[in-house]
Amino acid sequence: MNIVLLGAGNVATHLALALKKNGLNIVQIYSRTQLSAEKLAHQIKTDFCTSPAGLKEADLYIYALSDNALAPVISQIKITKGIHIHTAGSVDIEIFNGKFENYGALYPLQTFSKEKEIDFQLVPVFVEGNNKHVIETLFELANSISNKVAYATSYQRIKLHIAAVFACNFSNYLYTIASELLEDSQLPFEILQPLIAETATKIQSISPYDAQTGPARRNDSVTIQKHLDLIADEKLRGIYAEFSSLIAEKYKSKE
Amino acid sequence: MNIVLLGAGNVATHLALALKKNGLNIVQIYSRTQLSAEKLAHQIKTDFCTSPAGLKEADLYIYALSDNALAPVISQIKITKGIHIHTAGSVDIEIFNGKFENYGALYPLQTFSKEKEIDFQLVPVFVEGNNKHVIETLFELANSISNKVAYATSYQRIKLHIAAVFACNFSNYLYTIASELLEDSQLPFEILQPLIAETATKIQSISPYDAQTGPARRNDSVTIQKHLDLIADEKLRGIYAEFSSLIAEKYKSKE
Image (cartoon, rainbow over all chains, first blue to last red):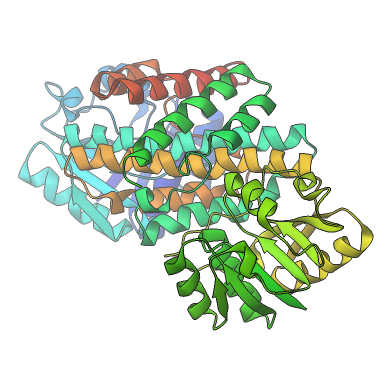
């Protein structure tokens, strides 16, 4: 199976490396940015192009593009043969409808940064297709790069994406807040790493509901007030107050 | 050195196990709840009491109590000899001033749940004392149970505690939100575990600022709006909107 990969960002890069590693044949990388296209093509030893007009014929086209680049790029594609899939959490596969006969999605539920290696076999991958042929092809492909493959409709996928934004993107932003608070006090961020690691590890064996600790869980209003008094930034103080009140509310009635 | 441990909650339990494991001599557990006192005392094979009047003489008294229990319990203590320390992130050691000659704090920066084992050697421990004798004793004690011991003033400790609330307690609450969102869609929480693990692992090698991914980082307002439209709960929608706008703001000017 010959694959053309459109995109050279975080998801495209990790997907390209996983496909290559498992012996799949990526015949071309497309990116409108020549530097990015060239870099990723070089990394996995293949060709690249910077215009949709230059795409090769292939069995599978994977659009690992940012959500708002999808429609404009699709509209420029001349080749209608092959299977066309995207990797977006929150885009319906019907974005391909009317243009291609075979289409779908392959969504890896993970946070990807180019600077950080990842074991793709552990990444849950959700596939969807508009017909049996696409679905079978995508299951086979996904199973070759991941041990955790499941079917998800476009509606389930966006629900997964929303949950992932809370669990991952917003948690990471809380780490940024914490690092800035420590910086203000000339304390190194490394101090928090064991705590962050344990917080994430705990919920592999107990539910996040049971894993909750801290002043708000204990409804310790004296400590919460001490903290609010020491947070200079108004927006951060707002987040602290809001989260504390939601957590206190959740546990108050149950203790 | 003989130790009396006041408290039988999450911190007291993990501290008791770590002290015991490293050969330290806990001669008594105090808790006003007999069941808790008895259980922890049994676990580490020592005595217990349920009234401050019943405390034994010892070299060190560790008050691993909730913040608002500290002052009432201290006021009932008859024995003024020995070193008296608490384990609270946000309580000044001067809470002991006027009553005891030797006092301080030993603060383990970690999230503790009774149901979850922990390697205490990896827990950063911060000590503070009101004189050289206390400080030396606490460093020796802390070094016997942890590989990461440092001095922190009461002011630094509360700053650490605030950062920890953001990085740990609030992140865990985000996991709870995510698990509830998935539950609404009949999807199992396990699906998110690799993502949560990777989110926490990433910031051990790259900064949280660089590790940020997701729609808000890309300033992808179309996806953000799709998500907002699908979040039924008003408070959750508020959190989603607030975090997305803060993240987008932070990265907008830098890209």
